[in-house]
Image (cartoon, rainbow, N blue to C red):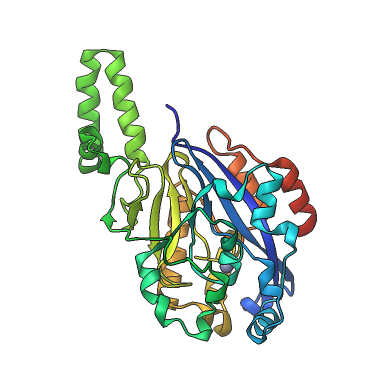
Length: 339
Ligand SMILES: [Zn+2]
């Protein structure tokens, strides 16, 4: 079956450095590098979609608040590391980007957004509701957003409780599959058997799509962006209100922005220090959603976050079914920078 999402590529667009022992108790003293990850998703029909835009050099301008930000969170970005520049290097013009999904509005996620003049800018409605109420401590520097941000904005409301892939497109077999149980599926299969192998194959297809459901057990509401079940947006509070996370059912891949700062750091969650916990907008939701990521991983869903190490993200993307095309040259360069 042809996939709607043709490829997923990863770019590290600048990075920041922090000490592990400043973030968590009882851990080795170690300086860690956190790349600002950007994902380029290609949809068969709707073209290129960016998930976040990394750091931009504008944040290096001499302004007191940028200087304070750098003091608490030393960051590094060059013009060549900006997402637009890396895409050009890859042969993709900024005008080709149709959609930019912003997980939240921190500087390491919106730094490159001004470079995409044609893109619709997608955020969750929960996030947008906060837009006029941000304070300095929320670290949303609105001047990093394009002047026509509001004109190009597409706020989405993930509101389909336990939406199953395909349930929204009138495919009753899949809707039934969602409503049904394994027992019902077995019965369907039995009926199909008597009708021949072709129908049995169809039952398997329905089953495999049924298995791609995000929702059952997670209690997550999602927004089906293209109404074809290929890209579901969920809103996860914790690090920021209404943080947009993406589930790609065809790959069983969950892209979780800053739900945590690195999947390899999940094991230290309970040792988090007070200051980094204070940075989380809603600590209770933060812990709840960390548990959610753990549960997804246990269920075999691949989970990546924005500040994962490039080699981890690369390994996961390369291992997806029908491997995504990867910009090997670009990745090699990134390895040199971030290793
Ligand atoms: Zn971040």
